[in-house]
Image (cartoon, chains in turn brown, blue):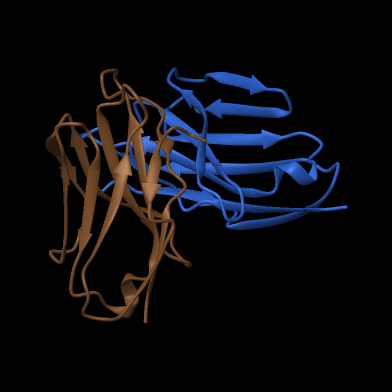
Length: 114
Length: 110
């Protein structure tokens, strides 16, 4: 157990639908990052939150959005889902207070769009 | 944006052989991190290198950061089947979020 909790572990949904992925960071970590990992691609950065505020944005589609709540858990919302959105979605956290910290990853949510 | 390339993409070795993966950037990096992802698992942080020319060892793993801070390598001595997985390097962008390399998938057979 890495200390970062992601739910659900698996999700199967139809095209056009909307889903919410949830992440609870490791205790004490203020930064949360979302990454997408497709079969033929590496880890693509989506978005980062730090202590409730959006800190950085990567190649995140407009159909995707995220937020970090006062208790520091984060949610990634994916809407109007397409087949190509099928991927592993990882959440990672870090203390966020140092120059750069190593990330602690959750076990991921495997999304399958059919 | 910043890109970090890794080579090779895939390597298959016999148990006991050595393995090296290389990470290259066109820009100077403030630091570099290495992660390992086992099949079906999530990335796990291995190490961070900060200084030019830095070398760090973890048992059979040796990590190096280039003098110009534009490249790095991970060398595994005498691979074991437990070393199987994908090894990623990662470097921070201006916003501190990490850009991950393309990864090197290591397969070890007996």
